[in-house]
Image 1: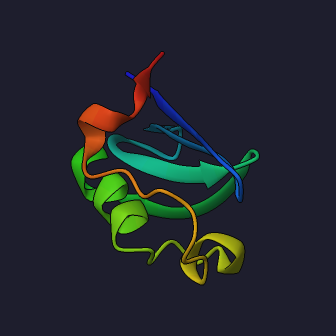
Image 2 (image 1 turned 180 degrees about the vertical axis):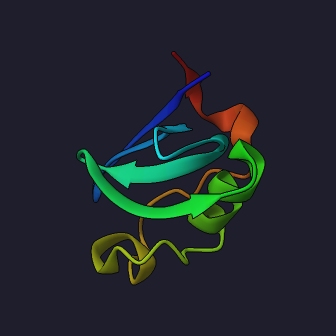
Length: 74
């Protein structure tokens, strides 16, 4: 299953990692930022603004998703 979140800093996706189907990858605009054990863990990195994407991690004015339930399933 994949998830998408549109933000002013870019479009994040959480999707299966082709290198290891047991984990997921967090991407922005198609660029892989990190791998996580679960989609919830990846969404948590976005919530905590610890994605590795400076435009998002430093932003203060953007609304921040509370959890994976705030993402669109696709």
